[in-house]
Amino acid sequence: MKPVAAYLLSIPLLAAHLSAAVSIDCENIRVDNKKFDLSKLAGRHSISVHDTSRPPAEYNTTWTLDLCAPLKKLKAVPDSDQCPSGTRVCGVVRSWNAVDDPEQKHVQVENVIPVAGNFESSTGKSLAPKVSRLKAQDSKSDGLQIELNGGYYNKKKQRAVIQLQCDKERTGDEEKRRLARDEDDDGEEDDQPEPESPTASLSFISYGPVEGKEQIEVLRLDWKTKYACESYADSDEAKKSGWGFFTWFVLIGFLGVAAYLIFGSWLNYSRYGARGWDLLPHGDTIRDIPYIVKDLSRKVVDTVSGSGSRGGYSAV
Image 1 (cartoon, rainbow, N blue to C red):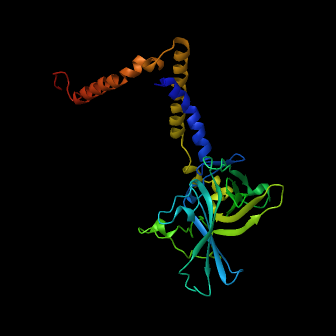
Image 2 (image 1 turned 180 degrees about the vertical axis):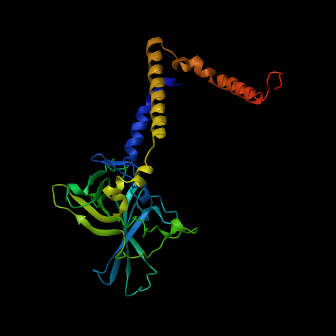
Image 3 (image 1 turned 180 degrees about the horizontal axis):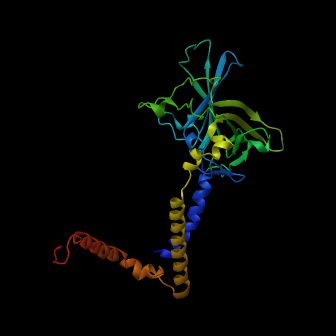
C-alpha cells in the first residue's frame, strides 16, 4: 500500500492539472490589472448562418459556444453529429434540397467542426485562451477579445476569436439560444435553427483560413454585452460579485494548512521513515480532535443549560 505521503505529495500535481484543464475562469478574468466577470454569459449560446450559394442544396451552419465550460452532450443526437467532449466552440453544418424538400423534413448533418476546446486526451491540444483589451487594437474601442484554440478539422488547426464589445444597454444573453433538448423534456433538437437576427447580441463575422505559415482556420464572432465594458468592470455592481475578504481568508487558510501537512509529512517520512498516522505532524493531536470536539461540545452544552442557575442563591 502506498504511504500517505505519496498521496499528499500528489495533491499539488493534481491541482496543477485541474487548473490547466479549466484554463479560463469567467468570474475572474484579469487583463492589464482590470478584473472582468463574464460568468453571466455562461451557458450554451448558438447562432445560425444560412448559405444558399450552392443550389439546389441549401446549407445552414450553427455555431455554438460556451465561454465558461465545455459544451454538454446532447442526449437525443448521435455522437457522430456533435462535437466531442471538451469542446467549447462547435460548428454543425446541415444541408437539405430546397427543391425536393422545401419543408426541410430531411435535413442531414454534413460536417461537425470542433473549433476550440480542451482535447488533451485525444489530440493533445488545449484551449490555451488569450484575453486582451480591445483598446490594445484601437484606443477608441471598449471591450475584450478572447482567443480560444485546440480544435483540429480537415487537417487544419482551428481557432475562435470572440470580440466582446461594450454595449451598456445589453447583457448579451437577450437572444440566448439553447438547443431545444436543453429546454424540452423530450430532448429533441431543432433541425432548423433560428437564423441570425439583425439585432442579436451575438453575431457571426466570418469563418475561413488565414494567411500565414501555419494552416489554420479562424471563426470570428462579435458579442455585445455590458459585462465587457471597462466602466462596468470598475462599477459597484461588478465588485459585489467578486470574492470578499472572508472567501480569501478561508482559501489562504486552507492552502496554509495543506502546505503544512504536506511539508510535515514529507519531513517525517524522509527523516524518520514514518508510516501511516506517524507521517502527519502532531498526528496524536489530530487523532484526538474528534474527542476534543466532543468534550468541548459537552462543556458548552453544560454551560448553556446551567446558565440560569445562580448556585442555589436567590436574588434579594
